[in-house]
Image (cartoon, each protein chain N blue to C red):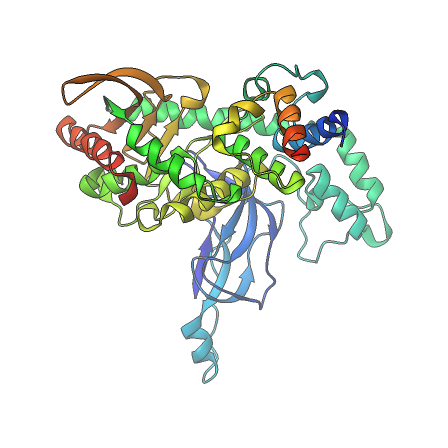
Amino acid sequence: MANFVMPKLGADMTTGRLLSWSKNIGDRIERGEIIAEVHTDKADIEIESFISGVIEKFLIEPGDEVPIGATIAVIRNDDEVAALLEAPVKVPDPLPIAPVSPTQEVLATTERLRISPVARKLAEELGIEPSTIKGSGPGGRITREDIERTAATKPPASSDRQIGMRQMIAAAMARAKREIPHYYLRTTIDLKRALDWLAQENAGRSVADRMLYSVLLIKAVALALRNVPELNATWENEQVNLKPSINIGLAISLRQGGLIAPALLEVDQKNLAALMQNFRDLVQRTRAGSLRSSELSEATMTITNLGEQGVEEVYGIIYPPQVALVGFGKVVERPWAVNGMLGVRPVITATLSADHRVSDGHRGGLFLSALDRLLQEPEKL
Amino acid sequence: MTKEELQTIVLRLLGNIAPEADLAHLNPTVNLRDQLDIDSMDFLNFVIALDKEFHVAVPETAYSQIATLQGCVTYLAQRLEG
């Protein structure tokens, strides 16, 4: 039997509020399949199951807010399901959960929510959690009028979210600056070969399959991390944990303000075309607010790229518990000496912010050097 | 298709890319990326949308020609005529 817990989806996430279950009790769920949708201050996140099996129990209701690590469901794994065919297994009762200071009164009911389909759809459109409303219809059924009445008294969701997001960013960045002894390195990289190769490559592709140069940078960072694995790690409980997968977090700005840094998973294993599709999809879903839990919890290093805003170089703050962050600036044309000859080349400034508890400048320098080298052979990325 | 009709469609496509933008006050001769705060991913999505809508694949070498609303409409009109 596996206890499914509220996952930690960000450096300073302390609680999560269940919006909805995506499955029912008794349903089969595969590892990686969405089990629930959870609200955090940064976004509404689809939570993936980490195990395959059959859902035995739900321990919280939509609207409940619980601390990270609290058991929210019980899943019977495949081995146990097979064993059940021979002998019944008693399900142990998990520890009760105390919901943490909910901001709104949540109806304490174990019954299925009574709500009309029209009201449910309207509630979704208006961003209202139906379980927080007391229905005025027959038998307590929630009606369209109930939703409209609630919407009229509810402050705009976007402003709530912006304030919450700002507070989360403030907490995470303050903690990072307080606890992580950052050191910073920079290098300037000639991008002529990479951009020429990309232009040629894109000329032969359909519009929908074109790649952005950012994808080359992301892949090169992932491959360079193989050379300096201590930068692909976390620092937790006063020790470094090297990560076997290279999952690159990308700082993505949101149109309404703020940013989220979801991860592209196993970047070093993917070819550029697949990575570009993943990248496009990730940006689109980040801005639409439909991320998955693994994308928010499994980044092993982060890239921030402010080149689009005209910034020439950026020295970023590390996202704890990660131990390094790479910053890219704008691609600019600069006089550049090659083989004793002066020419004009498109160049980019790459910076490394790294945690001195885990790595030294020497290793950081090797990383930037590998990054430069990899970008000189774009066809091998 | 007239330029006015083209412009209406282009504005609709831009609205899908930057839903919060005030397209009614878009300056037709100023760079779209600067006015709408769209990045290269948004711009690529815009080019993909143009391809789907008009069956016009804008090559990367012509991106500068569609950088403004006016330039984009003129470019599309030329391509659709040809």
